[in-house]
Length: 217
Image (cartoon, rainbow, N blue to C red; front, side, top):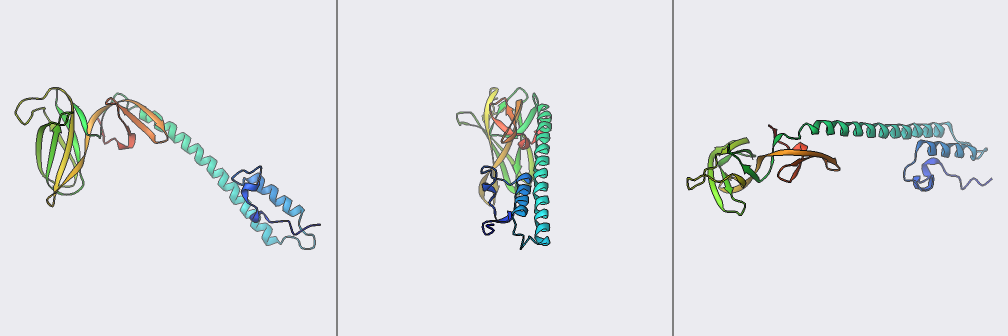
């Protein structure tokens, strides 16, 4: 009997099992262990310690396989639950990170994320073509979310027509001007689920992750 060519289960590459599959499952592991026992040298049989160690490895492989199945089931269930919850956003007005929004009959409201104490926070509202319409100084602000509102009045004292405008915010920190993140209102028209997770599709034509929504109105 040629014993030199027999190897233990630890020495066999999983890609050599079952037609080149990449993972060693519990059935393949058990078949390898049985083959090893059937072909071992009767004059030098496997030690009990080695046999117990391989049984322990078999249990570990089976446990990992069962855990992977359980995790896959949990992930599918969570995704279904998220889809149901996200559907309640359709038709709702939400506050999301954006740089443009619609000025309506009741004006335009939003919020600014202030990450550090600022000497002065300034809002700049421009037309779609970039022309500056209104400059609003909000003064010194501490860290947090800063709400603002624009009634549509321009720097000249007139009132802007209803429509789409660009909104940007800046802070003065130690004499340096820094742009801040602005959150503006939009309406959710649909939701979708993909590789990126749950996405809210907005009336403006853009899409944001549901986790990025700052406020539901």
